[in-house]
Length: 240
Image 1 (cartoon, rainbow, N blue to C red):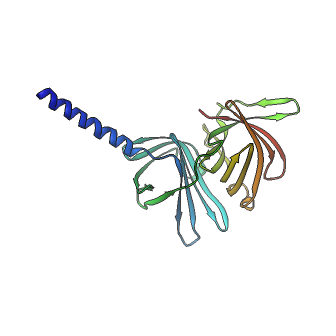
Image 2 (cartoon, rainbow, N blue to C red):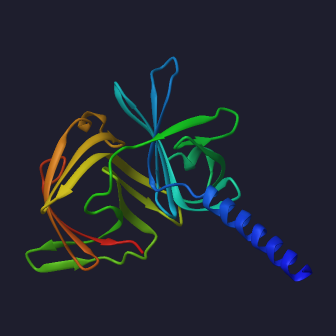
Image 3 (cartoon, one colour):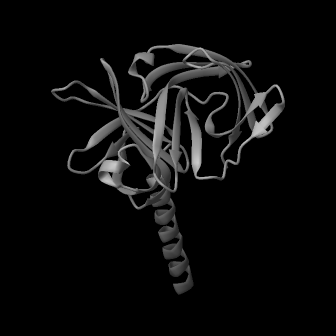
């Protein structure tokens, strides 16, 4: 009889631990929050897949990029622990990791703290090319010119549920070289970006850029014209 009670108790504990683990997981998605202030509304965008976090802030009207930060995350209890790879404000704040308390309520993601923010999830579903991709090279008249994606200087493109963002940065020095993002559609070899923010040139916001693409193994071959109208033929590789 005692063994039965102990077994039941262990089973209940296991259930509670399992439930708590499930409760702590954040559904992979893009989340949005609008912060209202005197200088105009600030749009906060969070991208979270199973292990990577990016928080970007920008104004929609007039268009203005504010800042972005991101890196690999883990969850401890109800805290997001993020080991940053990039921080566009690093020169000023020197921040290289963050601890963000959170909770989930009615499908929303609430970041808690001095000024809690309630983020609502995007309604777009998965698309072709969703994932984290690293710039791996270009195709020239001489063929493929590859670069080492393990080096600290990286350009990453993060695509998730119809939203995209590219970020150029250095993981060792925390130098930030630029970022841009918005929404995208991909299918049948056609990829279209609609620019919602661009750190290098706010006047590019609102532009739509169309490209051809194909995926071969771990590589995404991407061709078309840049935001400046220059031809490009790039190779991106999935980040694992």
